[in-house]
Length: 199
Image (spheres, rainbow, N blue to C red):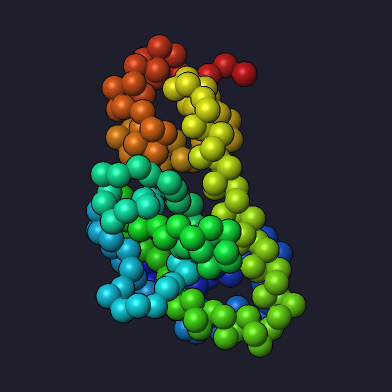
């Protein structure tokens, strides 16, 4: 995917969420880096800068450790912003490590550069920050809800509320995110005869 199409995706996302502000967004778009990753690559740079990412294509997941075998705390599966949003905006101090779990295309903007734009456009920045924080809270709440369900309930909940997560994610990765074994997920799918749940 070329840079024009990637940037157009960000504009499309911003328009959908009533967040498109010409000066702020064109400043951001002009300063994005184009990145691509292979499965299991650690997403990021070797310098000390933090980045806010926008997923153009593929799937990424996050752990609290630099180890893809540790517990997963996020899966991002549709075009949207991601990164250490909680830490950026003081929701918590956890630093997440992000990994590609497929071929991944994304854009990245240095967080310090983003803050410069926020200072120049405070009103628009507040709306964008509120959106990012709400997005992060929704992702945290999703994981908390799933942690209290059994395997069948988890699958039914995702089927109703996040079907694309099931459709786009390999079962081995979906099971890891749900905190269950691959065999447990397969058994549940077999019990419903490989059919979506009845309404």
